[in-house]
Image 1 (tube, rainbow, N blue to C red):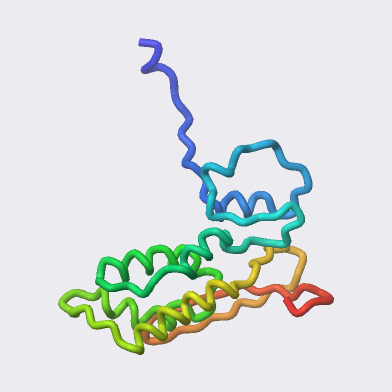
Image 2 (image 1 turned 180 degrees about the vertical axis):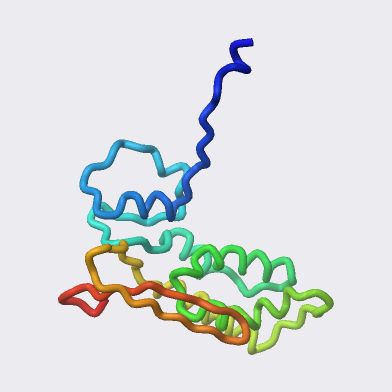
Length: 162
């Protein structure tokens, strides 16, 4: 059969990070409808980088404190998507993640409320992540704690505090 003789090319759907990396430094773009597939991006026409979608940040900021383990998991699922914008995310969310562990009863305390509010505050003040520029000096910063680890590539933008 002809269909069996055809070798189909298979390409995985690119992730947002793949697209942003490939578009770095570009000045001409094709007209693609990325709006329906990439709601999480918040890119202005003169954008200098990536930031969390303000509508999603607003939804998280207005989220009431969780009243069950399921609600804690749901909240963590929402904010984990934006973890790359929040410094010390693992440390901030550890009290909340404790509640989701096996055989741990749900008991909301001031420690959990403090963690919950700190995550919301960190998200509303999240900074813009600038695009990587291969021509600039790059520094790798690493950190670890009993709850997680992280690594960040940073670049100094001349003439600014970024």
